[in-house]
Image 1 (cartoon, rainbow, N blue to C red):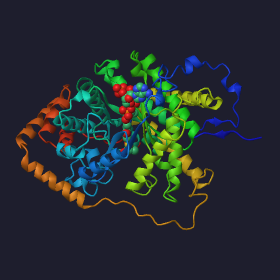
Image 2 (cartoon, rainbow, N blue to C red):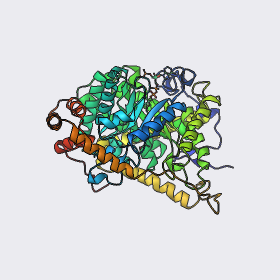
Image 3 (cartoon, protein in one colour):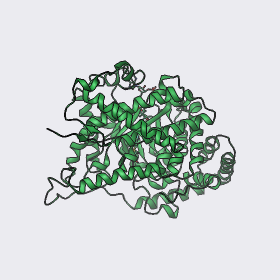
Image 4 (cartoon, rainbow, N blue to C red):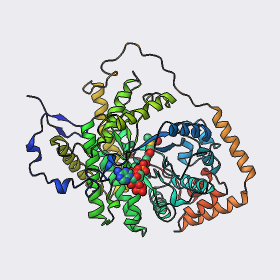
Length: 528
Ligand SMILES: C[C@H](C(=O)O)C(=O)SCCNC(=O)CCNC(=O)[C@H](O)C(C)(C)COP(=O)(O)OP(=O)(O)OC[C@H]1O[C@@H](n2cnc3c(N)ncnc32)[C@H](O)[C@@H]1OP(=O)(O)O
């Protein structure tokens, strides 16, 4: 007799599911119709039969000019939305010419120091037609305002802009690491962004609450959705406490998850996450607008599952992962390039990654009908079990005082580390097969020529900053930064004085330093 397997979340997977699995299953309560509470079957009634997901490839490196060329190539190749990767100094609120930035300028993304770089980055791209995602967290407000100012120069109003800022600082403390200010001040800044966007950029997705990075750090699917939704609850609570109406900001909350090669569990994960969030929003936060209850999400295929050995095999992994995201009802998708385990993707690899999505969208039949797995014995069982496991973990976070208190106790991080350790052990013991690594390895790997970022970029970026500081109205900039400090000390929305400073060509580093002066910088506790 075959044995019961364990899923990635350490839940049982039976060798056979039959009708007994759905005994007493209340399809109306658990599934509803697509586009209706509890949104298990997807957030839109027609899903991909009405419109395909957004093919949104994360890209950016070197200078704004080079990244702009890559975006034009991607748009030409049929990508549906842009997704900007910023370099580490930009993400940490430092300018390219600061000592701490040395060696990092333009490396993992594009360097954007001021509105001048932002203008170059989007040269020739129609900002009223393309939706732009920006993976920026602690300095999210700064980059969003630069984007809005550049759009205004093109005659495009805030209410015509669509896109997303990641802006999810809580997961930075847990897994990703690009935090600047302490949690309390970070949450205040996020509430200011919610309020500002509601008035000025109403179609913008103000946050992308992310499980992806926790999953890459080792979180299981159940932990991934639980810790993400627990963070989301913290944001909602903070915004409500700041006086915002839940239905004014919740329709623009968005999410971001991983897609692993374990297809069935991943599809169940996406369905369970939608159902849990809909209930939280309706029952706990009394959101009335159905849009406030809809969990809309972006997906990226699992980088951690890619291998440097036999990198072409990654193409196959990515195709399966992407398929899982689509079967799970994603709104937007990034498929990784096969060479990402080695270096920044080459142009050819980036194109193949997009082609993978296009094959799923236009050559398979999975887009022709909504939520094709609904009613499947195994899928509904796994969805229920994942839901129960995640709800229990969300409660464990709440019992510790909510996401921030749990972060300060090191709870999420240590749970994730335990899961990561289990997987590492299984790979080492060959209990878990990784094709081309601990099984089916080659004696000799074929040579591979990775893309390298030109070190000259840093010098050029510093030169541009020197010129900017020589040309602009420095007195005006200093005054505007003082106004920003004053708002940060009080309760006024900081985005308004921040916008004035950026318009006068204050740099991202100067803005972040002004806020650091008032709010301080976050120092992790010993338990980290
Ligand atoms: C690893 C790396 C790192 O660490 O550095 C990262 O983080 S990379 C992280 C990269 N992150 C990202 O790229 C995040 C991307 N996120 C997003 O794009 C968003 O947050 C999203 C998930 C909500 C997806 O937004 P989107 O604009 O692409 O897609 P939407 O689903 O909102 O669809 C766009 C519009 O079409 C409408 N629409 C779509 N489908 C339908 C349908 N079937 N029927 C009717 N209407 C539909 C929507 O209502 C919406 O209009 P309306 O708006 O009027 O309702």
